Structure formats: structure tokens, C-alpha cells
Length: 384
Image (cartoon, rainbow, N blue to C red; front, side, top):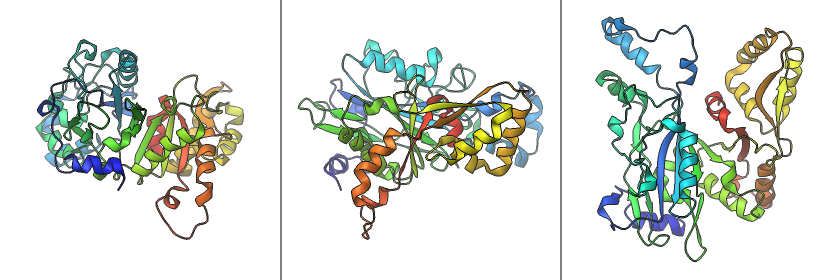
């Protein structure tokens, strides 16, 4: 058990975290907010032939209605953003809104940051009733952390509760902030399908310059069950920070989320050049060769997607491209032959390769750092 893990356990995070309101009334320096980056409904809403309503649904046999509700259990991406009360807070909040729901975001869950003006009413924590009238924000992503099944009707909620559970309580020790802050579990999460997307202050620093990894604020009982985890590439500080600092950040995430086979590093528009990777494009005349070459690169998010879908998916994609009569189609493939994050990881982990003893470090040697465009994150995760 690490020092920070001990602080968490001794601070009461194991059973039920103390609510923010029950602690010091002062405003905390750090806190975590959760929002939905993708609710998994984007593929369904893209079908133009789907009717907007179906009044006869209530007349269907109960067993058929329950089966239909289960189809709404889709892979979701939940953002966990660590915020710091400093001069960058307004910028951080703007990034969080843009990342999760654009201008239509009015809700969040799991926030503990305060009630000041820059909060913009984002800390409405009534998650069971987060709804703007139509069950969604203004797009397929929204600020509510409640899955659509839990916000539709009593019958759908009874189905959803079989798949989702409240999780991700967190606690920030007074060793990092003069005002300790915590939250009980308020985030609905499906550990079998959903992904956690880490943004904000991945490494929080106190007044003396000592860092505390954001992931250690979360309960280890929760993080060890997460199968899909992603980080915002920009938060790693490359190339501004030294490689040992970047490796330390990657290590903390990989160590805390051991059930995840890979760490997805999401690049915002324009960051491909910084990460030493390029966006591949293919045409109908060369779609087969492009797909073959992209599948051979490792690690590669599009290749992982093909593995998840199998040969049938590959054939369907080829037919779709062939029907476009030579029009060049931009794909989501990132050719990352010079994946700088994988090189940093392997460079620092190389000393433990080949060891017979399977200690904590050797278990993480083969962890893959996968570069992926943020806008394609949902598609890549659903393909695993």
C-alpha cells in the first residue's frame, strides 16, 4: 500500500466517503467532477429511418419491452476531471464543457468544487433526476452521469439497475489541500462496458511542490475494476516535461487501473504532430492496402477496432469505401510508428523485462500506450 493509498483508507474512503457539506466550509483547492463524454447512443441516432416516436411501445408484451430496454445498454465514456482553484479554473471549466456537451451542458455529478460564480451552476448533484426535458443534453454527449435507462421510466430503470452501479467515491487529503474534500459514490457506471476518461490535473501539486496523482484520490476498489481507461494527451505535458515526469504520470494511471490492457491517449485536433503520429487517409482504390498496412502497426487504435469486429467488419468497411467511386475518405487511423508515449514507457520499463519474479512492475511491462483521436474515442472503445 502506498503512502497516498494509506491516506485515503485512513481518511474514511473505504466504507462511505464523507460528503463535502459535512467538512470544512472553506472552498477546497482541488476536487473532481464527473460528466458524460459519450452516452453510447451516437450510432442509434445516426439512423435516418428510425421513427422519432413509437406510441405502441406500451402495448408490447413485457418480455419484449425488457429486451428492447437492454439494447440501450451501450458502452459509455465518463469523464473524471480534477480541477484546481487557481487562475486556470475558468479555462479548465470551458474545456470540460466543450469536451462533454458544448454549450448545452447544464449538469454534472460528483462535483465538490464549490458554489462560487465560476461554477456556473455545474454542481447540481441530483443525479437521479438530471434531465433537461428530453433526457439528453443538446447532442449525443451530455453533462448528466445518469445513463438514459435510469432516466426514462420506472420499467427502464429497473432494467438499468441490473447493469449500472453507483461508484467512484473520492477523497482528497488535507496533506494536499488545507480544506479536505470528498464525495460519496454518485456516478453510475457499468464496469463491463464503460470507460473512464481522465482529464484535468492528473498530477496535483501542493504549495511545496509535492505531487499527488489524481488517480489516488479514487477508491482502489473501484479503479481496479475499470476495463477501459483513457487520458487526455495534453495533460501529460509533452514535450514540456521531462520523460521521467511523463513516465511517472503514466505509471500511476497504469498501476491504478490494472484491469485495463491498454491506456488510450486521446489527442485533440492539432496534436498529432506533437505526438509524432499522422492521420492516415485512404481512397476506394487503395482501401485494402491501406487497411493492411495500418493493421500491421502496433499499437494502433484502428487495428484494435478491426480485431474487435473481426473479418466481417473489415469486409463491410471495404464495401462501403468501394461504393464511393474514388472519393478520398479520411479514416480514424493514426499511424504511430514513432509513438513517443510507448517509447517513454518501454524505455523506463525496459530494465524489468525478462525478470522471473512477477512483481508489481513486471505485471505492467506489456501495457500498451495507444494514441487515438479524441473524436474517435467512442468508436475505438466500442471496438475492443
